[in-house]
Image 1 (cartoon, helix red, strand yellow):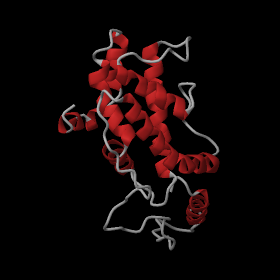
Image 2 (cartoon, one colour):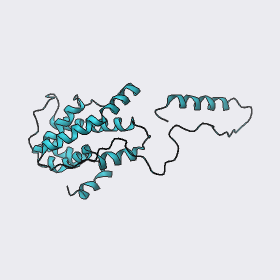
Image 3 (cartoon, helix red, strand yellow):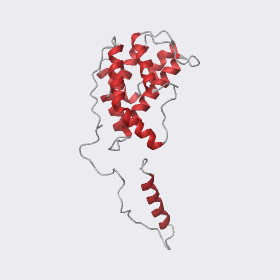
Image 4 (cartoon, helix red, strand yellow):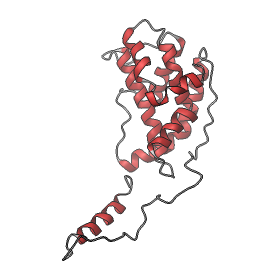
Length: 204
């Protein structure tokens, strides 16, 4: 279990004891179930009910309001996870999560805000801001009860969050930006291949 070092140590100690056996091979069952390993027929569900309401592409203000509201609901879980792990992968852009969100949404108007990181190209900053925002959501949701699988986290992000809907809207918007590098971010780096079917499903 990646988030339970105590369980990991107990399993490792038992394995080391088996190495001391006089003969082998030794097959022995471990009498402690992995935390959170019980089956759940209903599957995992995020305990924070987000229910995104997609905003029109020409309404950046509506997008930003919905996105920041969603982030506030997840904020305590993100903080809890960061404190528990002692680290976070959020911050590669040099922007705080809310700043990253504002910067990404500013592209919806076709005239993105002035580059808050002048030493970084607009395309690079946009890519890293998207990575930060997705990392914020991922770290928040895996800190909640339930131990979701990576696939469940991905389906949740792309199918049930305002951030996921925003990312799905970006490729069409970025295609109209004159900068070629920024266009490439929209074409190849915002929506992973496994989720690109959602672009057609949403009519984007």
